[in-house]
Image (cartoon, rainbow, N blue to C red):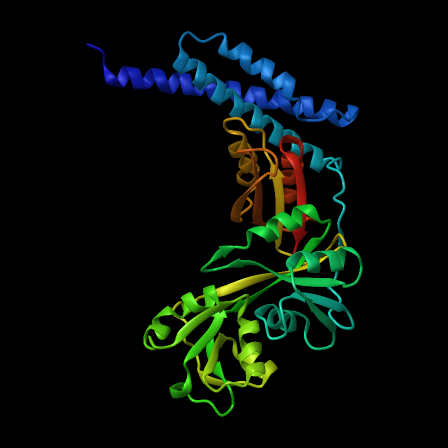
Length: 376
């Protein structure tokens, strides 16, 4: 009968040998990095790694081991690359990132564009971020705002990227890829919906309520208390407030912000009518300059990966090995390429950090079309 302890002792012996061999392999990888530093060769050699893995697979004796050795060698070679990237950075050959660090952004006497109409949450976000000493204008569509800063008609744009209840603004991610514009800041606004009416209106007068569809749904509990009110969705909450003000009908109200009430001279008939008290929207501040504040703590990037098993995992491992904390990941389909996706990642760090440089270098070499969207 086989003794379990003997088997465990044999496994321990094999593990010690594997550890010793792994350290020897990493030491050779270190020497390879030194060679590449002197010759300027790239770290990632896809064809070379493919041949090494195939050779190792051919040494196995069954399909399970064949698959296992492939996965094992993929990880060993990934760790080898990460060591080489680290050594390149330590020797000052990691390359310069095409971004300029600034002490602070200009927030006075600048031109800022926001999407929507006066009174929109995006205007409130703009004012909270920049203050009042700016020249601002609004456009109808997000694309219009991106074009305005790309063409130099505005210095900055303030645009929504994510809502804590409704999720991400997918079109915005696509626009960040399409345009050579970059995120330099963010502003979070609480979506504190109120019921707005004319100055001489009372809640008992209301018969019709206007708002964005999400605004109506986010105030569902309150609106259910007034089942006789007709609910009409509009393009956004600010447009709803504007309509109530322009129509001058005492029976009309809007679900909008207190900020919109001030903009259009309306009265807050009831505050805080939303159900989710934590409902917030995150806005990004975008410019056409490749700049970042020197004390920036958050980085956004996007990239594509080969359509093969484990490719995304290998990319994400660069964050793990460099101890970088990811805030979130999104995916968007790539136009014209069915079932292939582009990934967007937000993570903690500054473009001047060595760990960030290591991670970005590895991702740039191993992914496809990696783009730094901003450091803010």
